[in-house]
Image (tube, rainbow, N blue to C red; front, side):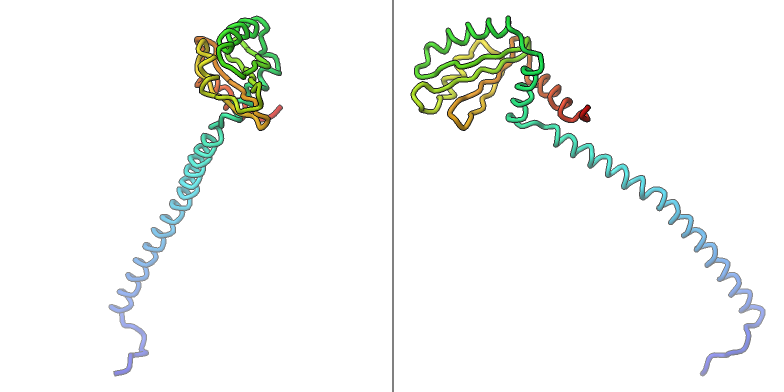
Length: 179
């Protein structure tokens, strides 16, 4: 049987109107939900982006020993150098390192908080880092960086200082905008 092309009677028309009203209500609710979702979606994306940016900044802040050593070098060069602290540490280092053969203490620079000592091999061989670290037994925590020319730089804290505090300061300085 073919569908009727006759206009709907009163009941069908009433049902159609009710159906259209329901569809209109559903469309209005859907638009409202989309508008709310649209308002929240950028916020969620923004919150996610902020969290991602924060994680990226934290990852960028973690300094390698090389970067940390560079920051310490810059600090010594830009005014935190202390002649008195350097003199005291140099005396202790020379005394302790005199027991280690074939190593020359070529330079010491200290601030009140940390020091850098440069050691060079006497005979052209590589400096034994394990022996060298023992020569700074009077120092706080430390690390070494080996130069391509065979020299070793020993970075260490003064008594009562920690690398954690210094690293935080270095990370803040590196992440601060220039100027």
